Image 1 (tube, protein in one colour):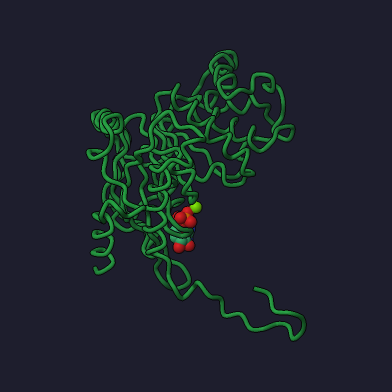
Image 2 (spheres, helix red, strand yellow; image 1 turned 180 degrees about the horizontal axis):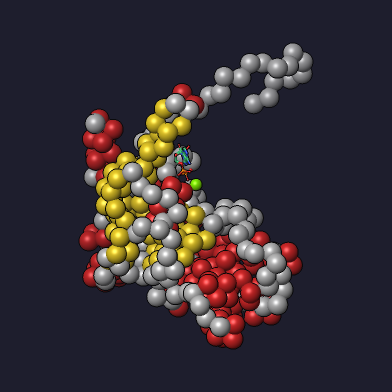
Length: 313
Ligand code: ADP
Ligand code: MG
């Protein structure tokens, strides 16, 4: 309870606090209008009172406790939080790959009760079919939905072009870099025209430069497509760069700490990383997440393993 009170007081901290991020109504006119337009759009994803527990090692782990939030049509909403706070569990339940213990998930008003082509998914690991070409991978979902080879190819090719891989349409996954593979995964997920794209740490395995490039590509793609994105990450910079709003989660039990409206203007550019709004938003997230970190795990119970040499710092 006291934790909640402290968090509440943080949210209303004085404006001299470098981590203070006012809600959109107290931001510039452009930001206010952007959020007003966003909230007028229909709700695509509605998560209400979602709970998930697992039995593990003779005990019960509450991976998600009473998680509720909504995403509007064409919103890019990020979910961040420390390892183990239930981000992947949330993504899997929204995708219909796992069942909740309680609560509900609705996409365009329809309750989720299993995987469905109206939800696409991109994971961290490369999940491409190694025996299929780039085009063949993007055609996969279309073939499953019953299209002929020719029709599937016709519908898949514009997506291959959109992610900038037309020249590699007949290449196989082993011939591509990590970033290119994830672009194929995005094209494959979007080719069936899903309402919602669920991305679970999709760029986490990439090197820093490729990751930054992929974030930029994702924003370019999202601007061209009528899709709502639920993007899971533990990288604060990535969340602030991409999101309209950020759902900040805490662990044990996995729950929503706060939903932050990102005031950084769009279109986002690399230069924004150093802007005062970007820095303040990131500090605010750090404060929320740091506040959560259990102190007793900061120090490992390591015994001294060496008797020789200089001490290291
Ligand atoms: P995150 O993606 O935020 O790191 P996860 O959703 O993977 O977190 O996990 C949340 C919690 O649920 C963790 O404590 C994890 O150990 C537990 N958990 C996840 N999946 C299972 C499972 N299949 N069986 C038991 N415990 C699980
Ligand atoms: Mg995870």
